[in-house]
Length: 119
Image 1 (tube, rainbow, N blue to C red):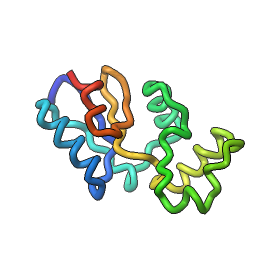
Image 2 (cartoon, rainbow, N blue to C red):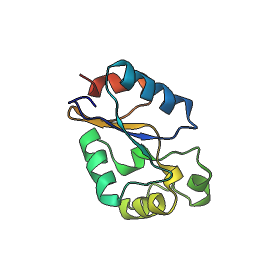
Image 3 (cartoon, helix red, strand yellow):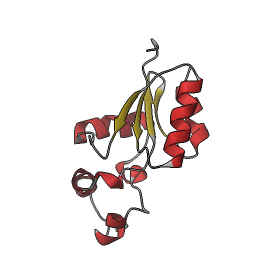
């Protein structure tokens, strides 16, 4: 393990997520891999990640996930609490991959964004 700690919130079925994981490894880092569909982050973890990335919780929503439309998450009047509750109930709503390192946090879409948080 590298001294530079990196965590990737990863979905192995996603090609972008796999590419970002490869890019991290090509940088000589073996990241902590969190398969968020199996082990979803807590609300507190998500709040920290969103803040470190300079985003709002709405920015990490995967709008292509079926629950997005079903739950009416496009409604701009929905509170952050409602969005966090939807994510807790349906982790598939988390856009991926998200990478966290000592240099910050990034939603790595496009995949090249990962370079911002690597040494």
